[in-house]
Length: 202
Image (tube, rainbow, N blue to C red):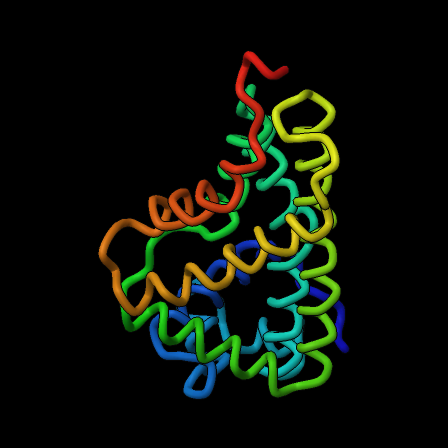
C-alpha cells in the first residue's frame, strides 16, 4: 500500500464515508462518492486505502475503536452522578442521532454486509465483547456505590443492556413512535429499575 497522504485526516475520510453510506448504501457506494464528500480526489483514497473493501474495513476499525466509540460512551457515563443514569446516557450516546428511514436502512444494509463477511464479522465480535465489558464496568461502579443491588449478575445484566442497545434501534426504525433516545431510556429503565436501590436502602 502506498504511503498515506497527510493532506486529509483519517477522521475526515471516515465521516465522509459514513455520510456517503447513508446516502447510497454500501453496495452502490464508490470511492468517488467518498472522495466527493471528503473534498479530495479519488486518487488520494486509492493511494491511501487501495480498494473499496479496504476502505470499508478501515471504516469499521475506526468506528469501533476505543477513541471513536468507547471514550464517548465513558464520557457520557462520567457526566452523571448516578451511575445507573450514567449507563443510560452512555448507551444513548453510542446509538448516535436519529436517522431518517432511508439513511437508517442504508446503514443497516452495511451491517448485513459486515455479518456476511468473516473479516468484518470478527471485528464486530471483538467490538461487542469490548462494549459488554465496558457496560459491566459501569454496573460494577453502580453496585459499589450502592445504586444497584448487591449480588446482581453484572455480566448477564450487561449482556441484556447490550441487547437493548441493538434491538431497540431496530424496533425504533420500524415504529418511530418517539425519539430514539427516549425509546432507549424507556427500555433500559424497564430492565434496570428493579435492580436499583433507593436512597433509604443505601
